[in-house]
Image (cartoon, rainbow over all chains, first blue to last red; front, top):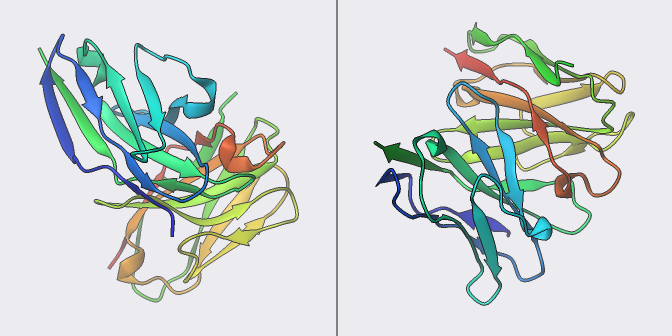
Length: 109
Length: 116
């Protein structure tokens, strides 16, 4: 069965420090991977997706098929990055999005 | 443009009671979804509707039924609520032009349900 694992429930860093939110997945094929974010009192929203290879709000994520990982990175964390981050996976032409359990990022001043 | 709206925001039920959670979107999306979010478990798909007139089971459909009333509205019904259904419920929608989960999903604000 497909699974997404986010090993850290909470990640606390100081402003300006690098951030890496870990995401590992189990699937033998070629999944599509996403990062969704939920800021305080806001709705869950898409941050970025693997297929777009884009950088959003300074965040990037690289798919490593060998390690089955899709870690989210940012070189210099900002206080406004504090939020709940979810890694998610879907299969070709599927309507099912499988979420990890989430990591709460806390950026301290 | 309200996006995805959900009602109610919060509900308390007694075991065995029934209720319907309402969801509507004004983005002319074809696909709609219901998720539940439990502590430490992320979001899990309950049911989805790829397009108007179709519904399919997700990961955790037991104890729920859904109705795609029209293109805008997708309701989730608990026929006989159980304490295990205490959760936060999210509705989402996507364009649905291709495999829906590959598209950006737009989420509602959530409904917090407590079953005593």
